[in-house]
Image (cartoon, rainbow, N blue to C red; front, side, top):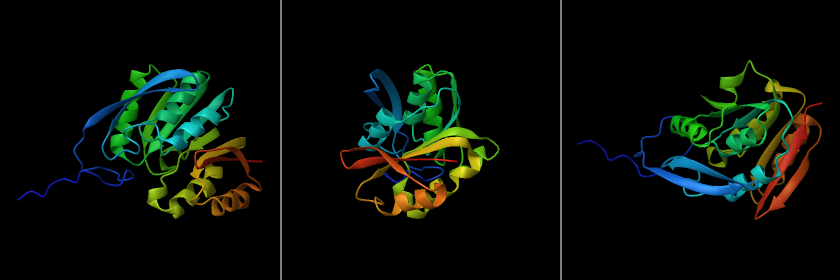
Length: 205
């Protein structure tokens, strides 16, 4: 007897086995309307979550250069960044292959041309590139060691004066993660606080 596929599973699974039921989210971000295809086993499939929304609304984008969205899910952060600054070259990465497929479709759905998505954990798919900005709503459910790795490994793919901007839950890692930022970059600032989330930013000097 074939075992029943799970209805839910961790969104950081590389190759989700749950039934691929598509959904659609339409929302306004930074004053513009976006549409995103979503599916089971991808983070926040029913709406753009509050943490992602706070990061999108407050992220500081470079005028030109390269931008990376780590753990992109169905692509909301990177797609909005690319849409608002066509001069940027945006790369999005996710370990979840279903998320990668959704992001490719969402790039087409939102008519974004200056972005691409790659399959891989953390920075493994972009090791040879250098970015002027890295954005992340990290997969906390994957464990804090994974979240820390996003911070500590970031300088390896950052250009000089590049920034890392990460949204975190105020109740999870609010004391520990700023210390990791400071140990890695020598400092850290809070860009925004709202609805139980905060956006942290540090720069490579």
